[in-house]
Length: 229
Image (cartoon, rainbow, N blue to C red; front, side, top):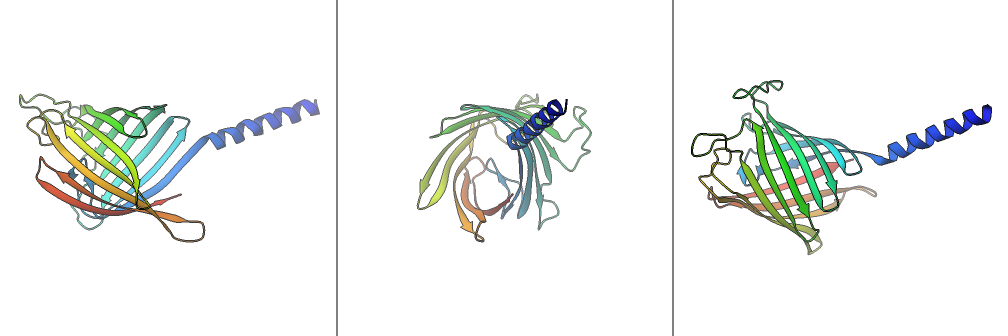
């Protein structure tokens, strides 16, 4: 009997240890000089924390943004459930902007936006498609829900000791959500990331990027740093 109990305890410990090793936690934050999202200017200097867990290809992440210098800057909380298998990824994100009641999901009253995403990452390039499926979406030219969409292609590469990414993003049809009257390129960006040693066993990734929004005829420069555990 004692041997059986010992065996069960050992198996329980092994399963617990395996689960702890398999489940990963992500804690971190970006500090950015400006909050630029898909070519849109959403605010000045901001802190953007992240908290997430993952198991295999499944992950659940919370992401937020709060302006540090301007009271009217975007305050945001997003929850994303995603799954990746091979080169394919799918996700659903609940965006919430703090000017409304978080627990209000009633149509025409909510400040939540629910977005679905499907994409493929082939290593040399990735392609992502995003569509708002419900919530506080924009309108099309007819005044109906636009099911606002955004498509983005990105190519990573290395140059001069940095990790680079070149990105182009477009809105395929008219929507007030992205302020477009039809197909429009809203994001042409180039970003470089480099790890800076901050101690014997600790590095801080820093990044700089330049973004053009041809639709809005705007240009932005962003610098940031990532703190992660």
